[in-house]
Image 1 (cartoon, rainbow, N blue to C red):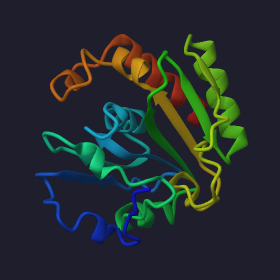
Image 2 (image 1 turned 135 degrees about the vertical axis):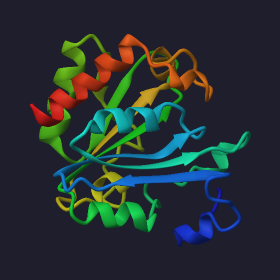
Image 3 (image 1 turned 30 degrees about the horizontal axis):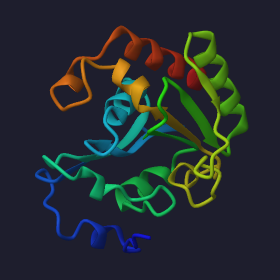
Image 4 (image 1 turned 180 degrees about the vertical axis):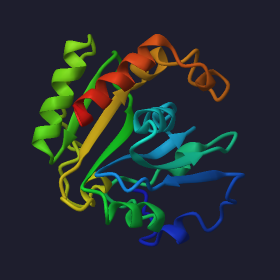
Length: 199
């Protein structure tokens, strides 16, 4: 099993900011924050989704791998993700919603975390709008209290795991140029999540 440094700065110590990775954070003093700790080439499409869902009113944090290859080495598990920029944002955020990518072979969204009311609202909105969404029953379902989505003020966040085929349907392609061209499905997903969070 791969071991990770306990300190985030140690984790990125041999990487160059704005060459190997980007950290984006915007604190809008909102009750809800969107997180994409594995964005860019790590889990493609998740950063674009987090930023779009945040709109003009919700806070967000994005850690983006921008290496030409091997961005997977920048994948720090959600239960060990401790970037101070993200943790500082979460100190004054009631509910965090983290967006991730998974390798499930069909178009699907798995909704996990500890915030049952928001989970139910998200499931209802997604399924009503034609997305295949279900409760995450895996061993990485976001229920661990140390998961980054649960380090918000309420200690109860939400984790969305989007399959690769679903993320692929959101863009012209999942490579860097393709992610600059979102599809109608992308916009519909963003609206559904915002309706669940703010409705």
